[in-house]
Length: 361
Image (cartoon, rainbow, N blue to C red; front, side):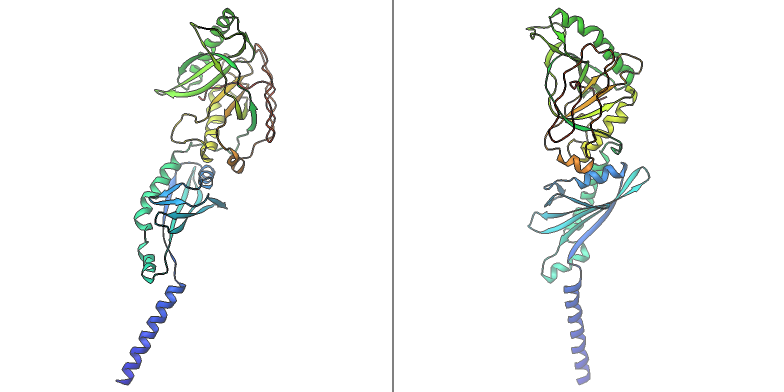
């Protein structure tokens, strides 16, 4: 009996030692990982995850305690649970064909109570949340524009608001439709302005496209000088967008401007959490200034595109810093040169001609 008793005591001691070692040396977090397939370029996906601000909801009752940080191909951030608990979230992004693979991991710190530590096996509170959280991340990332901003060049400038005479119209996004609308505006607007004693004081501009029933709608016209008419049968008067703007010089055909400028810029702004990727509408006022004949075959080949900013744009510098100032396109056939745009003190010089609105095709 004495030997049996000793064996029992030894067994109990071994079990207690094992439990103690497991308590102090074992995992102190409950976690789950989901692998996501994202049909968007890996750099765009990584940039959006890395710019996620504090307070963002990760899962039901779980929010980012501070802004995400990036190290290599992994984004991580501490999270706060609604009950006061803590944890972490991480995203590891790797290219997968033309898209990306994201390993999404959510962790919950376990308490000192030994019973809590058993939640390592079940996944704790993370278990019931991970599927819905992963689905929300996947939906958000797949809403990004299917574009990369790697070759995009922009600068930050200050642009003044100016008196603007314009007509409004809508068209589909084809180069032919846009060129047709612009051609009609070039023919129709100057006579109406002369009739109302308004002088053209800048180049043709197209402002703030928005989508209505699948068509792009925008304002086409000229900056002007003169007394604002009291009433107009044809056309309207207003002001061009003004303030801090992102300026892009584009010297290509109308048919390529969406692919070469608008999609990359939308991808950049969405990656920076400055534009809602779920809609094709621009969250910022945009406009173009044409420095050549926009009625020629293929439309304007020489223009400036401006995104007038809203809010703090400092995050852009961490994703894609502004470029050196690009020279203003040489005006060819415009009625009047526009005034010089003021340069931002901390960014790049503005153009030699005043910026003008542009349709986001």
